Each structure stands twice: as structure tokens, then as C-alpha cells.
Length: 185
Ligand code: SF4
Image 1 (cartoon, rainbow, N blue to C red):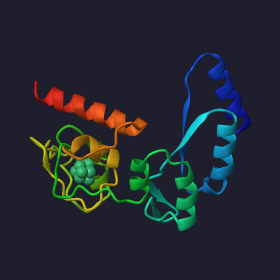
Image 2 (tube, rainbow, N blue to C red; image 1 turned 45 degrees about the vertical axis):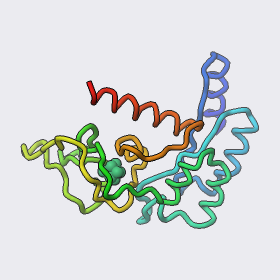
Image 3 (tube, rainbow, N blue to C red; image 1 turned 180 degrees about the vertical axis):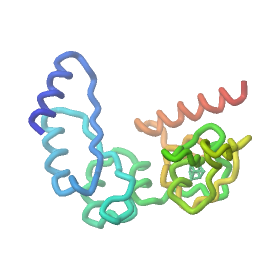
Image 4 (cartoon, rainbow, N blue to C red; image 1 turned 90 degrees about the horizontal axis):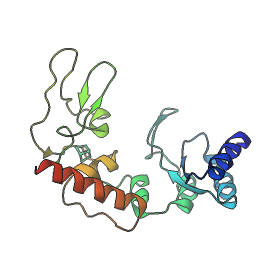
């Protein structure tokens, strides 16, 4: 931590604007409160980044305990991150551009339309090395019950309301606008 703080101070003194993401990995949750308070005490803009993935046989964020959630929530700056932490974002039945404009690829060449499809039993889009990959030709209905990759979902599903005036919200609204205007050219 000391070396990290030294590096931050150096960058700050060199004129960089720093924005820190504190990934809420299960191995650091026991010290997160202390770390966040310290970083903020030093004047750094530190925010939690909700960990999503598998660790120790558990699936996160679904398996965060009530206590974990309480600590993380203390530092969440916007409601979207809380939605992610609560695994509430569902776009099933809505048209999504993932698979048409966005892909996730496994090292073995298997292609999925998004991170959520990658970790589900839903079919892939084929395999690059086997010559079976087919890009979706247009936006297609989402069949995944929970969008575990909500930033992808919020970006590629049209018509979902997003809270503006927040860092993530404004960024996603801007990117979504860019995507749609590129598509209409
Ligand atoms: S809404 Fe989410 S889960 Fe569904 S296809 Fe789009 S990115 Fe994937």
C-alpha cells in the first residue's frame, strides 16, 4: 500500500487527474473500509468497482454476504452499481446488439455474444478455429435471465432508462448515442 500511495502522489504532483477503482474482490473485503477511508482521507477519488466472477467456488456478486454488501454500499456513488451488486439487471426478452456489435471470445476460439452468455448454458455463436462462427446480423432478443454484464446490457439494449448526472450513467448514455448514430450511417 505504501508504494502504491507513493506512486499516486507522484502522479498527482505531475498533474494527472486520478480516479481510483477499488475492486471488491473477496480477498480484500475485510480491509476495504479501512483502505477506502484512508484513500479518501488522503484526498483521492476512490470508488468501489463491484467484483464479478468466480472465486473460492462462489459466484460474485451473487454470493456477497449481507455484511459484504453493507460495506460495499457505504461507498457506492450511484444506483447503477447497487443494481449490479444486487444482480437486479434483467433484459431478458429485449432486443440487444451484443453478438452483432460486441463479442466475447474464449481462448479456444468459442465466441459468445456477451459475458453473460459466456457463463451460461445458452448457445455460443460458434468457434473461430473450427470455422463455425456466425456473427448475428442484427439486434436479437436476449434470452439470459440475469445480465451479469450490465454495462454491456445497458450499452447494447435500446430504450433502457439510465440515470444521468452520474459518472457511469453519463458515459453509457454517450457511448450508446455513439453506437446508434454509427449504426444509422
Ligand atoms: S442484455 Fe445483457 S445478457 Fe442479454 S444479450 Fe445483452 S449483454 Fe447479453
